[in-house]
Image (tube, rainbow, N blue to C red; front, side, top):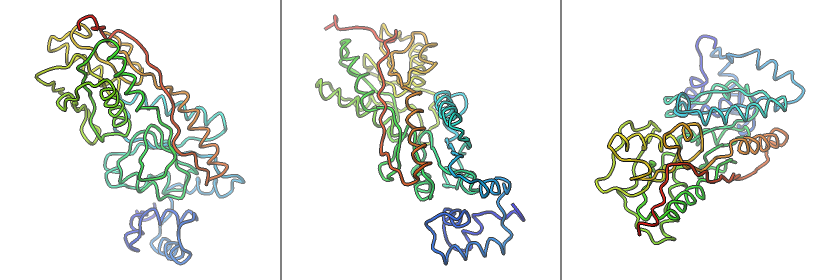
Length: 343
């Protein structure tokens, strides 16, 4: 940017949000004519210029808008642990490409998420629609909810903000995993997952609780064990309670894999001593020894629904879908032992 001037500098000087500045400079709705004029005049006075003027010129000349979709993902979901989200992102991008829609990807750093900084793709007006894949912090969601672009959440939702979303049926998935263990004779069942880390973990936990209630099984707080910090960082050392259940429901296959490894290091056999189930049916579920019984998330169906909704939003920016729920299915593998004969 010319002279290093940023949108935040303009926002600070006028005492408005960066969202307001972005909308004003992009010519979007949601800004009064008087404020728009102030922002534009100050931007010119301070020497602000978008960093990608070629993109701006191309968009201004284009006869039809809605051909560029931004995809945002928190950095805690990418890298070695992010295989599930990488495949989901790739599936969505490929389906958009088949419609001649370009995907613009941006990884949101921890600092940007904590400070609710405007993504570059939005600040520079290079997109016409936004998909957020994976849970974002509430202050970041609040910032995104005020942009004037069509917005879609994938694999999470936030009830405080009326944003359309596509999610796997985590509540029922947690229920059927727990019910499967009950059917195999297990009566002492624990749960691995950090509450409030993601909406998916919360829903899977609630499905687990529902099954315990229906079968009149005891819920023990010490058997609900955290697997990550509030910022999403995986806890390296797993702590187990002194008195163990006969089975654990894990909120994802990665956690199930780590739980199995930690149990083995303690000399505990899986499934002979303790059974373990996961969620996602992604790569790690098949390479683990034993292979992990899990709920399969239909990534292709989630991507299809996300693209269907985005296509509607590109044609009609005011279109509302609500919450789209994609059912999963139980995949039986080798990590559960039938102990019904013990009772």
